[in-house]
Image 1 (cartoon, one colour):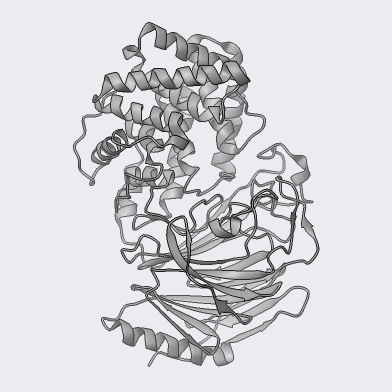
Image 2 (image 1 turned 120 degrees about the vertical axis):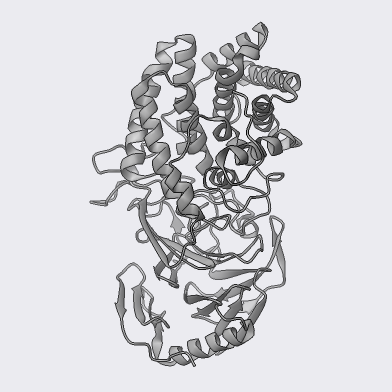
Length: 559
């Protein structure tokens, strides 16, 4: 299927054309030759440009894959290859030479598909590729197990949600694998189920598509500071939802090529909803769940926790996610159980403030640094992961965070082997260049972000580090020592034409209110906070304990 759409960002076909042209022109990176080359070739075939070069590149990739299979019996992250390989063959196989067709058939049939172990997206790619390979070359053994996995997987996703939910990286692999299956399965019942799961996934993901940003808390996030490079799911969301165009010349937009070529179209109301201004919107959802009578995401029964609601991928208690969008910003967080419930936090982003001001790195969050396993030595620099010893409570524009870091223990619940609990007995706040002004007063840190204002109160003393750079993003860190710690944050839009006057008024109101509206205790086994915000709500929060919100009259009105 060649794609004739015009370059118009106002509709899906126009955005598809733009994405295909951008990917077709990409220079292949040395560290990702096969996957990037295959998707670039698919884009070129879809456009009908440089078709001979694209076919030669597909031949080279299949030869490399064949050589890897012959040498090791497998291919590193081969599920990524067999997925795009079968997709390209079923779209453009009539252009292949006899030799290339035979090489593709051999590679696809011989690959050791695996959906019993591995990450959630890997198993799905394996199952979809095996099903379509078995269908194409009549291999019933490939279809039997893969069909069962697909049936169970679709049922779990539609009933309980993804384990790898709302990931700026891995979200695309659910959109493009189901798009491939939707386009090419001959089973009409399975095709209908693909449409339903794609509609559901996009309905959920598009709620967090805000002014060209994929906002909020994420299950797996490699770029927590944002980036000018386009993360895969961001390319896919822009394709379906429209809005501000991401940078398609950097990063990994190429994984969305399959979606640009697919016959699947999202429900029209999703795109229309995304184009509407989001004003004071609460989004509450459950993620990462599995029913008590269902198998776990990874089959590991040690994740069972008493009468917990489910056996999650990130948390054994499952995740409740809360996102508040108002004007120019989105504040999002997740609650994920108590200490010991977390299974895998090494790539999680538990909470984040994202806002729009034309800057590419408009994000602010705090973290207790936590590695992605004991062999992860540069996690402090990359800023990935969220500690199992951090818990948060959010209501609208106010967020409370508490930290209770055990000393001399190992966190033994993660699947990537135990890690020390107190290797980093401190918390850090990450402040990027998107914050144009910082004022410190009475232990509060006030931030001006151009279009928003944030007030942050670390509960222990702190100091500022020198400027650092993480993945190309310069930032300064607020460092606060202590195994028991916490913070309060409240956010507002800047609605006044006089930004400086609005900022000073915000500071005055916060300080006036905090005199009677803030109390905390970090000395108990489980620290706690009580905070009355400017909107008239009181939030009471105890680590491993209750989260209570109640209303009261404002004590310090605006001047």
